[in-house]
Length: 333
Image (cartoon, rainbow, N blue to C red; front, side, top):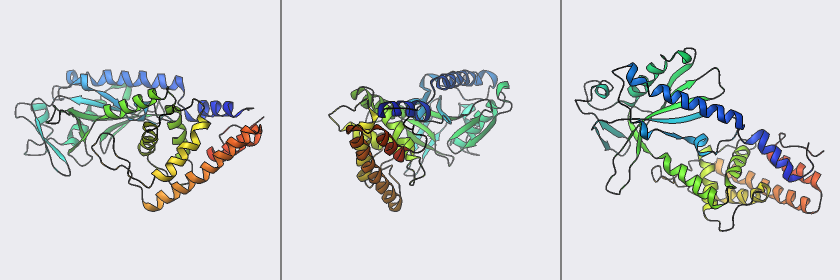
């Protein structure tokens, strides 16, 4: 029930795109409480690996504040001490070799080796999570890289990723090593993603986060194949990293520019800002073509919506925006 385009976007962002502030606060408190329970695991089980808690890190879109509704998952990386272990990087995996004296980690190696099994490490977390009284009725399982904790009392799941923090290499870089889903390990560094979002958003006076979340909503509409959340986020960040004119606080002014950028950039490589994964645009040519056509179609609609508003026809302008963002977009009254 709105009368201006600005009001329509404000209501739409508040009610359908951005996370509810109360739910966000509850989620953070729940996350912090869970982390406090994990930090007790070595006290509860002498065979649980030593923690390296100062390197724990939240990651994913919830931590970067780029998550749109619904709040369905919260990601945390739980750091363990390698106790003098070393790693070796192969072309397709990383192996971690455990010292004989590190008996907690030695027990989680592949049979008859000193090579650490990421699956056994995750399963060790699961065994301790199952002993937390508040989680007795929770669904706890291993899911590729993480121990997934699905609490019936909350709509979100926790993805808990065990990790190790490396020493600096010859290029003065350090990394987090996390499970690769196959029993071994791989590199990541969520600090780079987090800092990049923060830096670009601050450079544009805090106006980029709403655009990212809004376009993630657009991306999930059943009008085309969906890109991964991480892919579209980085495409938008790539765009704003090259813009000298600051993003407007009025999202309707930004949508046409972003749609026009997506129309062409979806065909091009999108490089992992961490310098680890290479090109993260793994969409098929068919999907790229469908996304490009939808972006162009909605780009033309957005220009129409802007022109209608400039002529004073707010009702038709709002109706045109609803063609882009769907039936949840407010109607003029």
